[in-house]
Image (cartoon, rainbow, N blue to C red; front, top):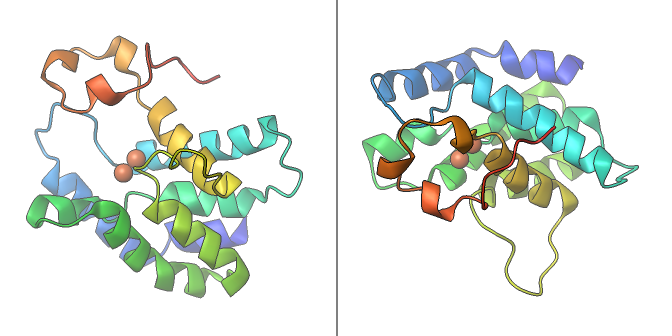
Length: 164
Ligand SMILES: [Fe+2]
Ligand SMILES: [Fe+2]
């Protein structure tokens, strides 16, 4: 996982995480630190494997998961969609990590689409779908003390099952 090592050791990746951490100091709702990113990376890969995606590449799944929320801090500082912002920030990191452009495109699309359900009747790239679901399954709403105040909770999947 050399490319993943390059991402997590990149000073810009660390900078964006520190900005997320700073903006979320004292936040009672879900946060967007390294733990969340790693959980989503693992779940994304797991879902792709479970779905029999024989072409699933671990580094691609992990890159999407680890980078999907790196632009979150921008949403706190301005009216900016963190999915779009994250894709922009992720692009140079993916290039520097050594991903090919044919790999970068689906990763950036998955990051851009990670907040949205697939439009009815439209099938999207397996990576986009897996990242979207992994992000939801990563949140342990059944064990959360602030669901009543959470804006996102009513939109979460019923019972928000634990993803094994
Ligand atoms: Fe997000
Ligand atoms: Fe997320």
